[in-house]
Image (tube, rainbow, N blue to C red; front, top):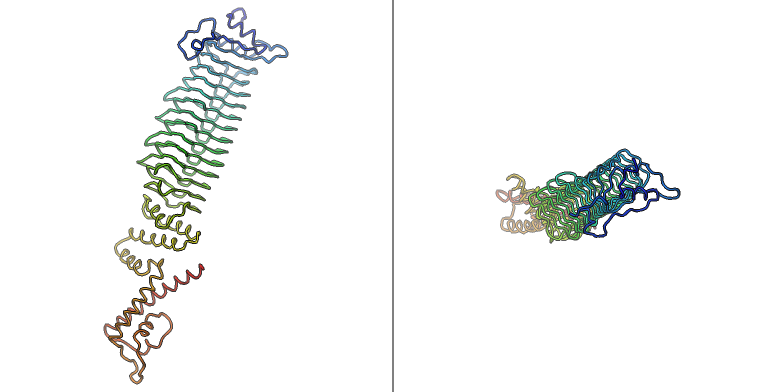
Length: 539
């Protein structure tokens, strides 16, 4: 580049570069210096992009003992800042600058890059390597920010950045690698899709106070995202459109505290197969208009839905299907509007609240060690019977096992009895009839001592009948004493003999009565014995 062709403003920058000095072309009036304002910037504030390129790629040698750098404020950059595939060894720091064209840094190797509070019609940095920080704080970028395949060894700071590309990619950062923290906070706004699929973050990912807007699709698309530390989508975070974290991994905790997600009648939060090393907080005012899914997710600590608002009335509002978690705190601020699917989840501690149970549940295959509060069997049966899939045996068996583990055997038997009764409702007429008899006589075997009352009743019945109609003696030469009570008791006892049954034989209808007492005594006696054996074994 011919130095003689430089304008006075460009010459100031050219002369300051070898020493890394800052050049400020601002007027001093905030209204006139706003890159997004309507004020016209004169020629005295214009710098051609080719001048910046020349300085960055080595047109001027650094002054000995100084660190050369391009540091420029309040300028209008005309032309295309094209550093594609360039090797840049000096810092680039532009503040409050206005770009006529989108800079192109694709596959460049850069030192630190600071574009703070600038106005850009786009920024293409695909495949760029930044040995230091990429600082975009407070800038406004339309037309898309492309960081796909980029590698940043320091911090990526997008605090207060406003991205606008409606219907397209506001941030394209597929396979981005950042070795430190990523900041998308302090008023970060994106109108268009924010894409981070396959990205890797070596520190924390912070979307605190961010506002994402892409109602026709994904507001945040971050499948297979890998974050070494924590992820913050809280502090007023909002998203219109799907937040997609499917298959992502978080090395710390994931916070959606107080966040507001909106994707009505579709999926608001898709965290299927997510892996989180500590806790997930969708709590304290967290609101989702649309489905929230953690299907197949793995949470080493707690998944908290305390104080949440979940709305998806025409479908599954909350899916924890196949979830693996140490603890689930399912105590929303109000009953979940829609189905809560816990099928085949594996949870060590499930903490809920009967006041906020969903009207519709799916519980088949759910495994848990402890319920808090345990509640009574009657209350928990009301919980089981909210299952939209109808009768399934496993939820009853799991609940009965939990009560037995707590030493509440009576509650466990009540659950199993309810299981048999609910199963009867699904059977044919013949099986229902048999079931009614089993239930009425012995409570399907779970009320064994109910059989004892039937035995007493049969004993009284037989005593009265055979008192009025004494059976005939089998051996007429023998005159045994007849006692109707002991004779009936002898018929009822399935084993042993009291010497009455072998001496007397009724005839006609009384023979049928005796046979009925013998058969009933056998069945009821075995039921009582089995119940007594179970009770003694537990003691």
